[in-house]
Length: 316
Ligand SMILES: NC(=O)c1ccc[n+]([C@@H]2O[C@H](COP(=O)([O-])OP(=O)(O)OC[C@H]3O[C@@H](n4cnc5c(N)ncnc54)[C@H](OP(=O)(O)O)[C@@H]3O)[C@@H](O)[C@H]2O)c1
Image (cartoon, rainbow, N blue to C red; front, side):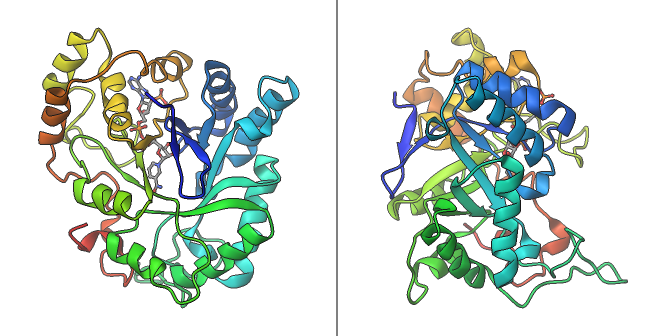
């Protein structure tokens, strides 16, 4: 089984990467170092995770130790929603590059399609608690991001949390120069994203699955929420292969040719999550995992559902 997916640019994106959302700055450096030592080459970052400086320190140390070269790594970061203005897109990218201590990103994503009012506040709201949006849209941001590719700061562009109508808008944009190479979306057996994946693949756009383990450390988790890692049927499949539920949940994407980015700051789990290339789920097991779909979404952002570019009001 390939450990890469080929992007429309012909670049090879490692099918398994390390997530870094919620990874505390004082733990993420060690996590990234452990991951690179274990063989991870793809790290998923974002400005909004507020830990890119520490991720960058880890990458830098591993390059200096000659464990990896920059070109062996595949580093993804994301433009936050308050930076859709022309001048700010470039500033945000430069800040991310500075923090990550890199000359270029392998992929730069628009983190969410909805644009927020520029300013220090990452989730700007008025006195009544209403979200403040920007007049610039993701299409405006995309045009500037294309310049980042031309300037060599970014190898390829992508989107995240986009529905297929929003991807169509980019693909149909007059004068489009670069197509998105990936759409990073929540994906796991409770939200299998079959229609969106089929759509993206038909357009030559790779899908990257986030929260593959169900994001048990999400700040808004409730005890009554469903748990993928505790699901008896997933545990049963794992036991059959002498693997852990996490390994099954990761392998599930690899066999769909979907890139997957589990997050951990625990060294044993970082290693465990990489041991997924030595077993294969049967067609029946894959079908069973897909049958668990219940369109259960972890990252809903319900208070943004009335915003013009909120992505999850569409079927897919
Ligand atoms: N584009 C977006 O909008 C977006 C949204 C969400 C996520 N993401 C990306 O996707 C990455 C992954 O998603 P996520 O962080 O939401 O959740 P996740 O990867 O589904 O789950 C992470 C949680 O699972 C635990 N864990 C990891 N490996 C485990 C194992 N082998 N056994 C048991 N527990 C394990 C981690 O604990 P420890 O860390 O304590 O080990 C952490 O609590 C993010 O970090 C981020 O990079 C992107």
